[in-house]
Image (cartoon, rainbow, N blue to C red; front, side, top):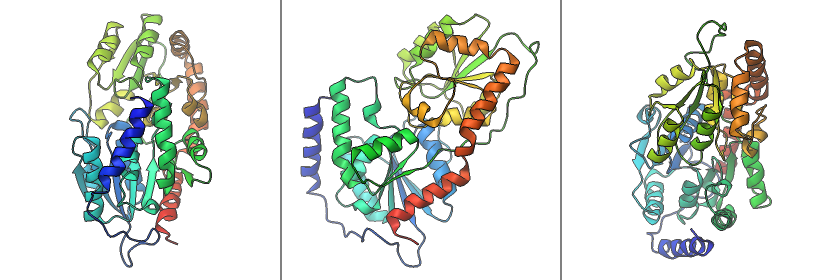
Length: 381
């Protein structure tokens, strides 16, 4: 998408939305007297990372009433939304239709907070005139202009759109220090709260293994097989490694990229239920994260919760989180995985990683930061 196309699309959205039915807008501050705070979560990418983050936000604010407006791909595993949410609505197809869906949901649900998750959802919510700026909380979960799979002019267009829409943001609830820094740069004085993701408790933590327990190592990655996660990097690392190392990708996605993995000898499990995925993660020796761009990957935190060492690619988001021992090439990734075959090295890597991440990624800290972000837009005491 060229920059001119992005600009013309924004103009067209504005023109079309003028025709939306008028909606009486509540004042930006303050909640309805005697009522619980009502939150409408909006996302067009209900994948594993965003879904996990939203679930922790819901659990962190149990006194609030939570609704969800989402686009659901049948390939995405669900996490039992009906158990945690007051109601779920599904987006229509098409950008303009989705902006109208936001308007309709806002009119009918009357939320105190509209929490947009991801860049496109942030566009839909902030391009919707009926939603007051003071009600909007925005979590990019990695800005689109961080993408490395599109040309520079397209990335410039994404950044321009974010800059223009920053004035329509009540609070940015950033998921990493990197994201918070980028948000602050987009518009001076923009309110930004760093709301860290949580290291979850996993059902099967890794137990230290003696060298004779089984031959070789098992290196695992988790997530959608897509350009962002760069499965080609993972595949190249598998090819560069010793044959005794078994490489596994938990997840599914683009068929062509899946073949890239399989041609390199990587086992691709397909989508698994969350419990199955975490149990399989618990049988691995090392977690490998090769994404080209990120917000704050839940899968890395799940690996920490499982007691696994992590070999991760050197990208700005992971640097900002303090993940140690980052690698820059597939060959370096393969060497780092092989080095963890030594038990003392593996245990030291686990300790370093836990020390860098666990203390800053607790449910209590997340709940406090999220409550602060929500208070800023509701005006509650």
